[in-house]
Length: 248
Image 1 (cartoon, rainbow, N blue to C red):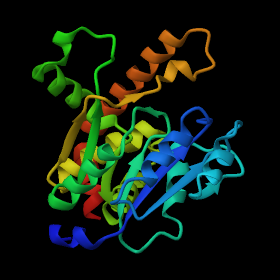
Image 2: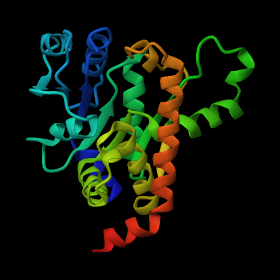
Image 3: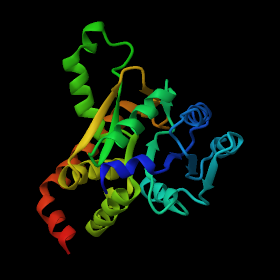
Image 4: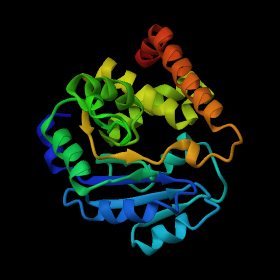
């Protein structure tokens, strides 16, 4: 689709949440203040807390799933009843410090650009020393976290095409959130001129270990990063097969 056509498309902000009562209210109120967003909607993955109730109280569209499913399956419910073509603006439900300009920047950059997707990179942790905020560190931080960021703008048609190709692989990892975002990044570089990453120094994310019900959060965090690397390598090593599947 020509880049200029993006100017006329609606922007649908999509938030997928599970037990995010602590942050979901602020996230939705911020998204509602973004001028460039046409509609905000939430898929609640059968939360055990007040996530769904808070989302409804915010006055946004809420799709409540009757049982918990893998996040990759949950996010597909956002496409139900969506316009034939739209800019899909994904947003995590556990962000801290989200401001309207963060999401407006992603929208504007996507509308004005030609790359398949625009993603964000969160700022370095606030307790890091000042030298860690120089340009080189920020570039590295963007390279490291941009590919797995939950904040991204992409055309609905491109997202659907990427998911259709990923489904042909029949990999269980594709139903997990990081599997989908890692595949989207590969797909964007293979077929859409790559991704543009916007660095937001003031944006943070509630750390996973703060939500995990685990007696060993550090070990669980290392296991998660090990899984990220494993899936990234699996996609890279199977790039030839994936391209052949795309040609069928």
